[in-house]
Length: 257
Image (cartoon, rainbow, N blue to C red; front, side, top):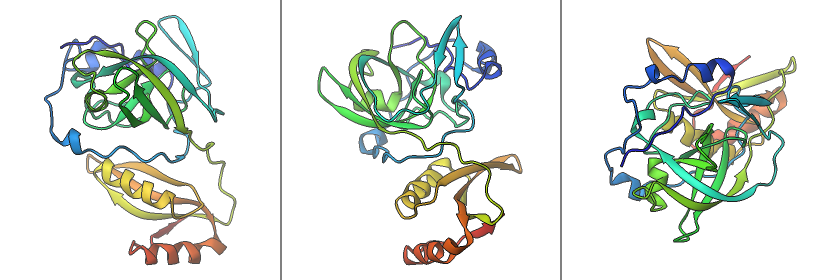
């Protein structure tokens, strides 16, 4: 089944303007090949990640309609129509700069701050799933949320295209980190070419330390490197954090300014 979908909405007007058909190899969306790994895929663990540096303007406009991003949101529960997007957008940038993966549990929403974690329940069959919101949309009709293909498969509406769902906020992002004080440092614990590996480590660390854990991206030799860092942290916390990492058999980390 083929579904048309407008570009996922952007962090700013420039990114929105870039969402033309020339970005994609396909003119319209299409169903990805089914991968049995979806059946065993673990749903993401809700955690409060730092607010994405892009994809969270106070207000943005798509097709002449204005939308506001609810950055201070602590509670959210809505019922509406869910759709899904697939192969056309696979591998392309989401609104917060990550890469869309049809085989991951992710979603697009018009107003939730990025990244947020929500529980989506298919009201027809009561199947529910936690997804990570890292994109903007859907901007078609009155749809509430756009899910990845894998999420639609897990909720059993991939062949229908849309479903009546309930969306509940589980974890909103932390406020953007202010400039670090003079004695603050960042501890780099790992670096990965595969984003999923970096995300798994970040989620593990988030439950071990009180300081923010985030992923910084750089390009080296034409390849993206995802660096997992803790910080900013004060000098007096360094020994305790490294002790925690050692107890978990993790690298003591590279201290950065």
